[in-house]
Length: 240
Image 1 (cartoon, helix red, strand yellow):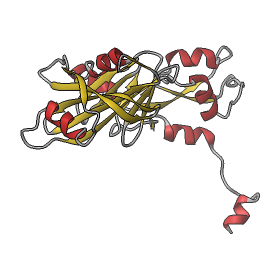
Image 2: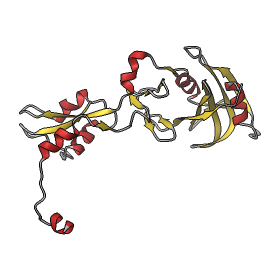
Image 3: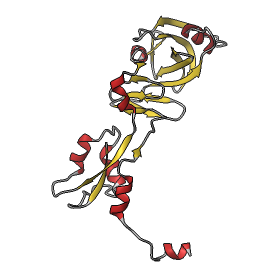
């Protein structure tokens, strides 16, 4: 019977009713994963935020936050782990690289706001996405949680990753969220609009918060790919 319905049965298609039901639904990353807006990461449940350089591709994955430079020659990864009792960020870094015979260089206390404590150093030789190379490791303590950064560049200078100061500056943007920032940690949502004779996707995406291929994504969710425009009088989906 199901097959008969799919092959020309009496199924009901009511696009306008469907659009009413999905108006306001979350789109993309959830609140539990955290949100990326203008290359700044916000996580309401954890109450923390940090920023990445403009032009970098930031991927919010289930187990990590991964950022890659525009030229794909530098990468920084953030994960969370649990700190031991009375362990400092410096203790954590030393424990994390214990057994690595290359040891640590260029250690420094991170300049963080809000009373947070952090420490960073360079592992002289580590297994990185670019092969065996120097790697910057950083740890920031928030309660019993350790926010762990691992960063490497395709090239290195004087035993340091070529983007080393960029890596440190990213770590030092890490801070607790301000009250006014919590709405920014909410997920993007689907918004239903009505097209008129002047509606063009190029204009629609000017207010869309998506940073990766916004026009393509809006066209795709509206069955307008690759280059169609909404018909005047029709309802269409956008993201806010």
